[in-house]
Length: 217
Image (tube, rainbow, N blue to C red; front, side, top):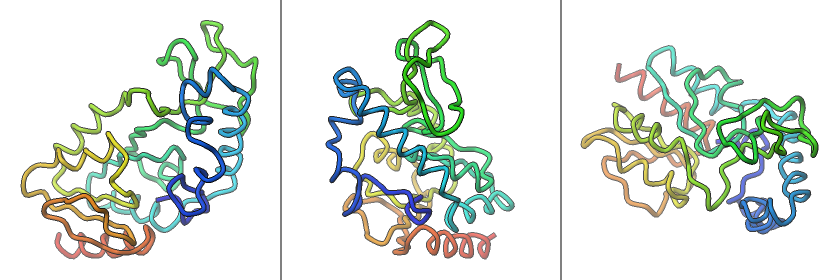
């Protein structure tokens, strides 16, 4: 969803996985082993985010709120949906512009600027870490995400391979008969029932989706 805003993705051909082993930057073990590398990795991502702006896809989804109740469940950790004007955004994998306690996951703080530093502590005195759900950690927002999908009258899946679990399994919670739209230049390998494929990037794909949904009102 955010690729067209200039945010590099882990899954692209030129993505970050080719520069950093996931085990070195996105696991609790990596934080314990080399917190300096992990901190720098997310500080660099955050610094890049401040130079990015919402793309047509983000803006198009936000504009759908004029016609529908829109709930966004995103695997992205940026704030581009919010900056585009979307009012209901649930982040499954955390938020890049926030930090949390290393000992109490309920203690979450906004980061002032792009840099989280060593020595910045939570209310319980522990070092703050990126507010990111790392590989091997539970996804606290999954229950809320499941409820959103179960109640949806229309489901749109935008810019995901549907290969990363548990998020990829959310489509299975849609009510029987719920129209499902998948926007992606490449069809995902996963089988989805009642699906309409829009084989475009997010910006163009959301425009097509918006026109189709509004026409059917």
